[in-house]
Length: 470
Figure 1: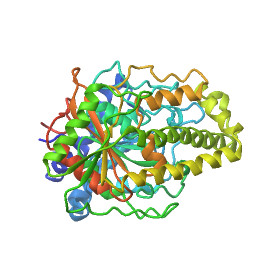
Figure 2: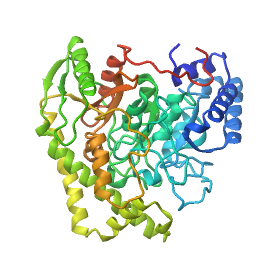
Figure 3: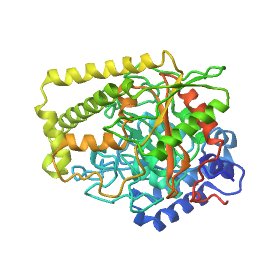
Figure 4: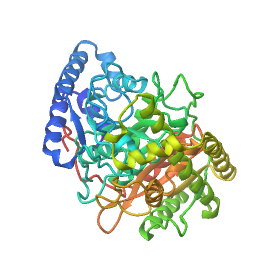
């Protein structure tokens, strides 16, 4: 049996298990895996009651129940983004007490409409400022594939929980690779939808000038496709809706980038995974077009600078707007806040303008290709402690993140959709992820290409899903 959320939903729908039994299995798994640090907050009572209501719906309103693609499947929300009613988001920070929100975001409401049952929050670094998930307030999140390594960030808790099988699918956000990097570290599928594809209302507070998006980390491409369909538009602002288009019914021109430059070298095994993915797609009738790092280097460098400035300005505005005591935050967070406070308005404007030019520059590459395959990470998941937050050098911190995921922020700054999935394993048994980027509205093209690669079965999840019998 395929170990994913679709399989668990099918088991519940067919009566082989119940939503309540699936929830109890997830709660038990969360308790067993407490040392993993994937979960920052649990409300088991919320989960049990919501699962009970869905079991009652299955009996009393079967048509309504069966219309929910993930009816009865337990899930976890991220401790950043949302909010999900009843789950007290603290953004991994001492600044906020865990006070329960009474409101769902539009996206959270669609999670529930799809039948997903949230019962907790996953670990995130403070304000999502890292590609590791080690907030000072705890817990320190570890990679279930190698507990001495990070699961990535900032949706590291989500990825760790899904990879470990505590849940089969989890909410995640992505402003600088925060869906894709953890998915890549943990052997998962991570789709960052394009700008405007996902709802962000009614609060619109996590858009960060359009670079952020929300969706999920999943164990399969079919789960990613199903949750994308359940969540996508109409977004009702603040950007124009970007409805997904059907992929072209013709052989595609696949751009392939294997070189990430001398400043951000990628290990040979991860380069080989990209080359293998290209050859596999070519064997399926697609044409391969080699691309050069010189076309990406200025876009990548600009993206990192724009990301840093937007994050800093946003944090400063948030802290000062709410009159919060930033002295309670981690040293790195304080440094970004100070960077935002002292940033001249023309510098921020130049960054926003540069972001538009990044998008235009990436568009020009799509004049000759339909999609681009690249490395997702430059190396395997890094050891715990590789992204310390006890210093105030924001440029060093940003450089460390760019060196680990050189092509992550490019999709955020440009707004284009991107997906990552594992395509093999390295000598240590860790995933070899690849990334595919496509133009606006081409999420279904990405999902189609990802499904083609996934079908070669080069990666198998080592842990089963709680509540799903093998």
